[in-house]
Length: 419
Image 1: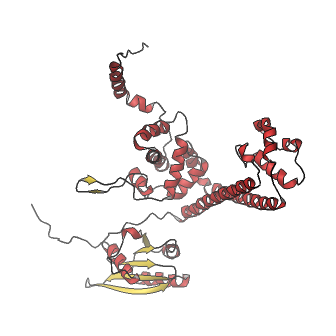
Image 2: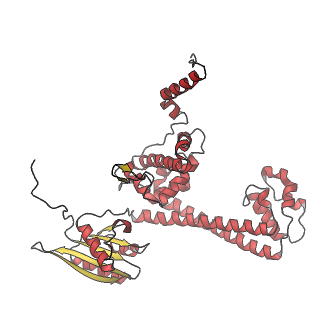
C-alpha cells in the first residue's frame, strides 16, 4: 500500500488569519502571518471596543492582508465587532464551549492565540450569522415574545389583586381579559357606589349572560380605593404593552411583505400560525442556503438526538443544544399540531407518547414538523398533511398480524368485510 509523502496531521487552511477574544471593554487580537520565506510569525495587540478603536482594528487587519477572523465572546459583545468587520472580512463566530483552552493557560492573550491557531488549521466551526435584514427580523420577533411574556406577568398581577379584594370574576368567566371580564373591571373602576344587577347585565356579552347572578355575586367583595388605584395602573400598563405588540406586528408585516407567499405556505402546516411563521423565518432566514440538508438544519436547531458513544456503547441521545429560540418556537408549534383533529402529527404523537413519554414525543413531532418547514422554505414545497389514518394504512399488515394473534388467543377469528 502506497504511503503519502505528506506526514502532516494538520494542514494549514488559512495562512493569514486572526483570533479575537472579545470582552465588553477590550479586545485581545492575535494576527498570524507568513512571509516570503514561509516563516510564520504572530503579532498581539489590544484594542478598545469604542467604534473608533474597532475601526483601527479593521484597518490593521486589512493592512496586513488578513481575510478572515475568528472571535469568541460572552453574550452580545461580539456584535459591535461584527458591525465593523462584516463587509470587509469573513467573520467566524465560535462557541466558547467548543474552543476551550488548555487548563492552566487561560488568559485573554492566550485565548486569542489559541483561536488563531485553531482557525489557521481549519479546526473551527462558525455559528450561523444571518444577513442584516434577518437579524433585524429577529430583534422584532424576540422583542415581541418578551413583551407578550411581560403582558402575561401583569395579567397575573391583576388576577392576584382582584383575589386579594375578594373579587372572583375569573371563577365564573373563562377569560378574565375577555370582553365581559374587561367590562366588569372597568365597572369596578368607574362605579364606587353599590353595583346592581342591571349594571352587571350591561357588561355581559355572548353566552355568559346566563350567569348574570353568579357574576354579580363574584364582584361583591372588599374593593377599596387602594385596589381601584392599583387596578387602574395595572390595566393601563397592560393596554400600553398590547399596543406595543400591535405596533410590532404591523412592522413585521411591513418588513416581511416580500415573503408573503412563503408565509402563507408555512401557515398551511399543522400548528403554524402567522406569528410563529414570522418567528421561524426570523431565526432561519427565507433561503436556508447555509444548511445543505434538512438533517443539518434540525441538528443546528437542537431537534434531533445527539451522539455520545464510547467503547461501542451509546451513553446518551440527549441533544447538546439545550436552549435555542427555534427549538422553543417549534415545541410550541408541535403542541398546537398534536391538538388538531385528523392530523398525522396527532396520531404520531400518541404513538410515540406511549413509548417515549410526552416530552420526548413532542420533540420528535417538532423534529418532523421542522423538516417539513425546511422543504417549504428552501425547496418551495407545499404542505400536505398525511392524515390521521396514514400510520394505520402504512403498517396495515403488521397490525392485522398482531390483532389476529390476539383474536386467536381469545377464541375468535378475523374475517374481512366484503366490499
